[in-house]
Length: 116
View 1 (cartoon, rainbow, N blue to C red):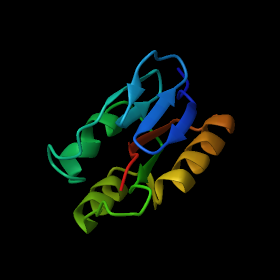
View 2 (view 1 turned 30 degrees about the vertical axis):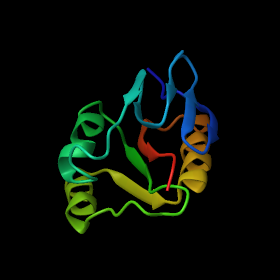
View 3 (view 1 turned 90 degrees about the horizontal axis):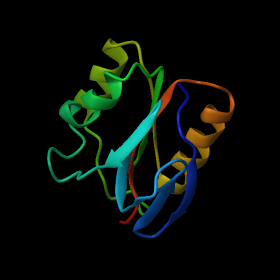
């Protein structure tokens, strides 16, 4: 199963290939995607656990268009402890990085915040 490409990104809207849903924020993994409400736990390890459990090699975290979303060191440590390469970027850059990894055939997942 391959990771779905992010088809489009604009302020407050993201589209993932293979899904009819327009997301504000989303999680993606090999074979799927869903809405992500970062307010549930912020970007704590609990927020990325679902994607990790899908067997990703790399996780890309989009911090928002203005990088307002903070990523605690505990999340990065959790990912590294599980042998996952993590990339924390501004969301437009994160989507470019994620799509480049998809094109290379990497089992990549992502959590993306599309506003602030």
